[in-house]
Amino acid sequence: VRTLPDLTALAQGRIAVSDIRELEIEDLLGREAVAPRQELLDTAMRNKVVMVTGAGGSIGGELCRQILRNEPSSLILLDQNEFALYNIHAELRKLAELYRHENLQIVPILCSVRDQDRMEHIMQSWRPQTLYHAAAYKHVPLVEHNAVEGIKNNVMGTLITARAANKCGVSNFVLISTDKAVRPTNVMGASKRLAEMVLQALAAESATDRTRTNFSMVRFGNVLGSSGSVVPLFPQQIKDGAPVTT
Image (tube, rainbow, N blue to C red):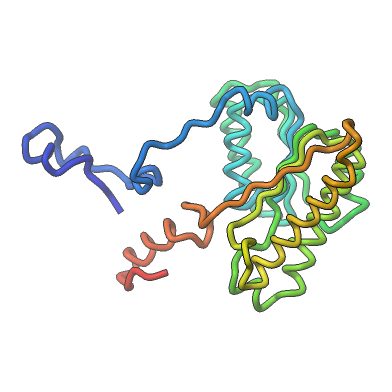
């Protein structure tokens, strides 16, 4: 899928056919992209030890790319998928060289968030200050057919990771949730709502202890460009000569 800036400009000779380019996600917004507040990013990332669970996924991987730009002291990548972890680690090492972050430590860790002892050991060893919990099963039909695994990973995995973070003194814990957690109509949405409730309960428990973890969550919609979303799906359907459907 390609795009030209403006057909009127093409007709007037202000641009050429050679200016045709790949369609970017930003072209679909219909508005200017909202720039993040750098001071908030610095507080959470700059010169900090940052951990991302589910680092090999589409959302976790993009989080890692953005975190790397903000110069953490160490970036801990955690995923249970060996190939995905290998890919994101290799990519981030190249980006670190490109940005000249010579002192940045990028650590790939192969682990399931459902392994309580291992999660506690990892956090005690690396002492992350900020943790983004993006590890989850998120494809609605697959989770619907594999409900037990979905609950184990999305709910119990969140509980184990959050408890380990609280025990090991992680300053900030951010759960990546979904809009499907609002009045859920499927197992995936229900599992993410339960994960949110887990964090709310832990936050209430530690509300009186200022040294404990600050828990927060953010709900994403259908993330453009993530695996299974319409952005990679539509071009593939066009390439295959198939109807463009979701």
